[in-house]
Image 1 (cartoon, rainbow, N blue to C red):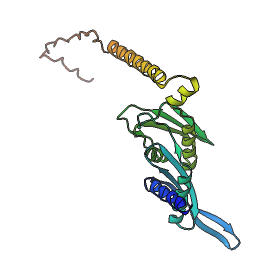
Image 2: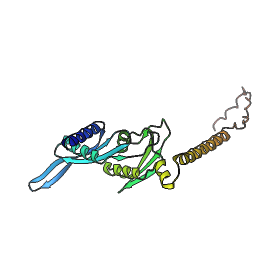
Image 3: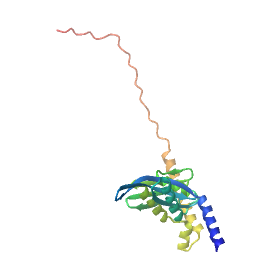
Image 4: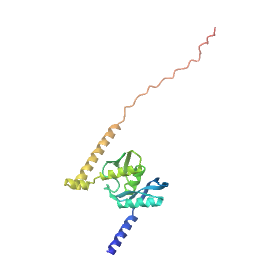
Length: 223
């Protein structure tokens, strides 16, 4: 039993060493007590392995380092696995909300990068996403934004899960998706060719230079 517990601890330490941490928000808070107010710090930390697992945690303490450590430990306990497409982006567009925060996540082609700001960028970096477009609507509270982003992750589904629900193979679902994308690309190309047709050249009439008369009209004398 002792050896099993030691092995489990060693595995946990190895897993935790591979995790990346991002400090998203830290602010000073106050607690009202009998003698006055006691000041402390609140921290929000994002934790992930950059391979499809990510979590978040918050902690409070009298010192910044202790608050950050508490938040990190909480984030490591509640890691969530997110299905990724080719290990770089999400499978489809998705929305999430929490309180007054609204988040829209969109899949992106290779080379797009992470188009997001604030807490969402930290979440995507720890998750391992390389191409995504995100938009935050509503409040700018980092806690609510992060929770809305994780709510959007719960609405994500992979082709494997859809195939299991419908009793089909993954190739059938992925093939249909790829076929629809090819049709859209061909339609876009056709529209681009039709719009790139050269327009008819307009003839611009050139004005003929009229000869200037050297004789000037006589000035009228004032009465």
